[in-house]
Image (cartoon, rainbow, N blue to C red; front, side, top):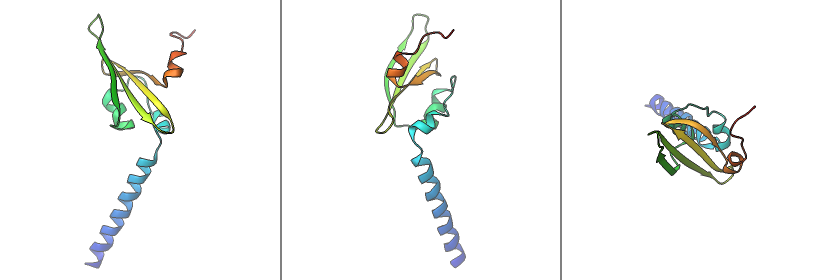
Length: 104
């Protein structure tokens, strides 16, 4: 009985530690793991489900576009843009507004 109680306590401490370490990672540190071409599901799995869909449309050539937003007290606003379910850009709106369309 004492052995099973010890095992339960050990498991509880490890589970709490894992939960806290995942919960403490900042939005900024998690965005470093994003990459172009990720699916929306992969992106949400990485960043969490606490986002808002702030835009969606179907383009003239029947492609689907969607924008989701994460709000973080420390990091600010993070926008993710998906085309046909794939991540095509992300970032702070101020940075994206000043990013050139093409790089030479």
